[in-house]
Image 1 (cartoon, rainbow, N blue to C red):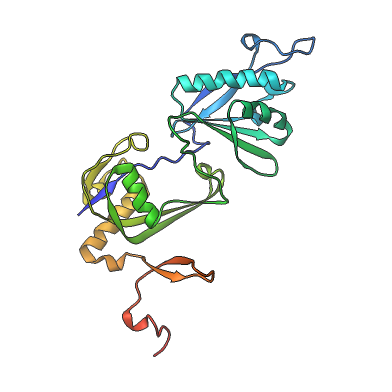
Image 2 (spheres, rainbow, N blue to C red; image 1 turned 180 degrees about the horizontal axis):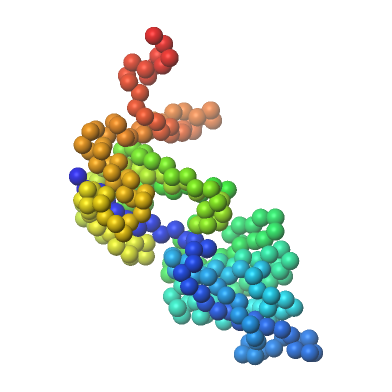
Length: 276
């Protein structure tokens, strides 16, 4: 029994891997901003593990009193630096009292991603091709069902069929989900092809691995090890012991359907559940 291991790239603005600098500083005595080369103080950007950079304007007092034109020059220089470093995206977190900087950022291509009562977050895609940044919602949900089949094919080149839902990971206040709840659904798929042709923009490495080896490997995540053991158990004792199967039912809205995931019901209970 073998299992496909793929790497999901999901942009995150808050996971720190390093820092980059954007310079800002005070005005001259006459009230006009100094040239960029003369500005003092550093506005730090935080690098995430997906190749993006996040800048929180509220953390930097050096921006106080800086006008929109000077900020635009500083941000433009920073964007050029990030592009030269191969960054794939920029996240700009703007507190409401610094909203006058938003127009300057928009003129450089930044767009709104989300906002709350006290701040807004803008994004700029710096990578090749169309933006792959995730949309924003009150909850973030990983792949399931048909989505899992599509994602596996797009990222690995392997065709598959959905078999069941195996587990759901729920985490509140997730930094990778902008402080919102994050739900990550893990599916069991049946491969229809085995040749790997993975997307190098989405994955660093992709390979077939023996499940028992994957379950015992040390340099992986707890969720990967637990799912590997779960699959081993299902393979040896029967997948009916671990699967959350899926059935489709008509919704209350005419012409629409929903998918319900649950442990398989015995045939005798399908239409007479709760009766003797």
